Amino acid sequence: MIKIQFEEGIFEKCTSVIIVPGRAVEEPGYIQTLTINKDAFSKHEFSAMAQTAYFQYQDNELEITETAENIKVELGDDVIILKLGLVLSRDVGGVFNVVMHKGLNSNKLLEAAHRFCTRWVRLDI
Image (cartoon, rainbow, N blue to C red; front, side):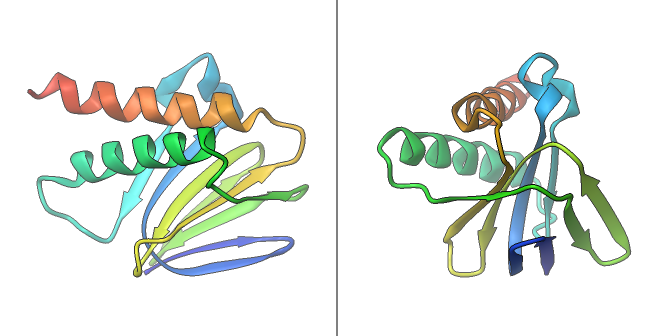
């Protein structure tokens, strides 16, 4: 499972994660994805995840946890430290968890994730 740690808490038992650094608003190539699901359809999973989270945010249905400290994402021996940005995850029950650094524009970051994942899927269609 993927684990996300930050100053205010921890999200454990995550199955998929989209990491959106603050600079991804201008340069989407910096967005990273992690999943425990290693099949060929993972990119479709991320596209659906980013789109659903973005729409839930627009409808005020997505709760965002803010932090002032680094966000640490762990999958096995792989560790990613995010100093500025947003992490969108889905747990084993399908619930979205979002943690973001204070002062950032959550709409822009979620929109960047949605656009990135949508383009990723379209490249192979």
